[in-house]
Amino acid sequence: MKTVARSSLLALALVLSLCLSLSFASREEVGWRRGEEGGREEWGKGQSSSEGGRPYHFGEESFREWARTRHGHFKVLERFDDELLRGSVGDYRVACLDAAPRAFLQPSHYDADEIFYVKEGEGVLVVLRNGRRESFCVREGDVMVIPAGSIVYSANTHRSRWFRVVMLLNPVATPGRFEEFFPIGGQGMESFFRAFSDEVLQAAFNSRREELESMRGQSKGEIWQASEEQIRELSRSCSRGGRGGGGGSGSSKEEEIKPRSLPSQKPLYSNNHGRMHIITGDECRHLRDLDMEVGIANITRGSMLAPRYTTRATKIAVVVEGSGYFEMACPHKTGTDSGRSERRERGEHGREEEEEQEQKESRGYRQVRAQIKEGSVIVLPAGHPATFVAGNEGNLAVICFGVGVSNDEEVFLAGRNSLLKQLDAPAKTILFGEQGREAADRVIGAQTESVFLRGPQQQQQHGGGVSDM
Image 1 (cartoon, rainbow, N blue to C red):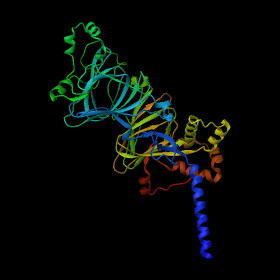
Image 2 (cartoon, rainbow, N blue to C red; image 1 turned 45 degrees about the vertical axis):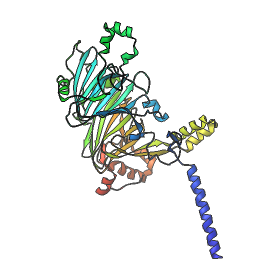
Image 3 (cartoon, rainbow, N blue to C red; image 1 turned 45 degrees about the horizontal axis):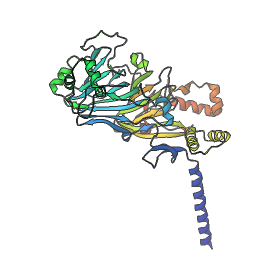
Image 4 (tube, rainbow, N blue to C red; image 1 turned 120 degrees about the vertical axis):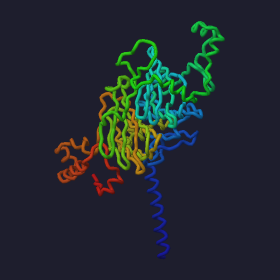
């Protein structure tokens, strides 16, 4: 009888355990899952935290090749199509260019403003705009803005190192889409002049058809190799200020475009755990016109960036060196809103009162987290607290393109400059009680560093404790 009773109790326990599991599963937070059809990614029930980081994190698999030859390639990140990102950065595109030593990139123009950062190497970049030619020497750490419609050609001037560039494109014709236009054609690419009729071209150039045919390009693709002598000749007139040769009237200093070195900027924040450099619209008029800024955070091995958020700007971050992870607090109601939209699309309409009550009951936050490495792209929306933590193998460097930076403020939530330190005594007493207030003061004031801090493992090795609030 004892054996039967024990078996019955065990069975009952298993049933209760299964019921509890199903109950918890029904209340899981909305996470990111991969759809079954065509590999499409969508919001849906699946996990209590977004370990993959979607839709805020993008890995190598999210890029597609735009152009590739044996001398280099150009790849473009998929669009920020998710409803959580579409309104703030849906019109922007991230792209990466890798060019081999002595590679030459064909003249072309984009129907997009181009903001780029030289991740590695050096090169010469020639810009044709405002009736003149400007030739620039660019190198690792440089930031530059090329206005939409400027004809650009460039080359890697180094004998052995690759020339690598990370860029953000701001399309001006079609939101979220950009095109590249080539005046000179070649193998695998066509000149846009081919779209015009012969009579129009002959009249436009005042030349016979056979003379126009002689202008057909001889290149073997968008990226191809030039001789060392040709590269040397091409870069002969380049300068850091962009006052290269060419005709036309000189542009005013206000209109001048030129490379600006991020590392040469005075660090906005700096200590043993990292440093941050930023170029704003005050230093670059073209960034001001685009309501943007560009910054880089170099986080030393094992250290972290203090949890912080921006009040207005959305940051598009690209890892240019090292590895680690990021974490972000995402409002739980975001998942609820997304789920409600899906139900509406399927025709499952509920009463507004029920939906509002559901939103109130689910108010909270889910952790968005992802391992990151060189090439990873992370989007940090305004108001979302987030942090980056460098791995133990080396430093972590993240280039950030800030979009919508007018009247923006960066708010730090931990460290010596934490905004939480500004809570007054009456508020803390109400929040924590008389006894809890002293403990809260100790926690808020315990961190002596600002912005860049010891990472979790460093903190443990250093003997720092973890307090519960």
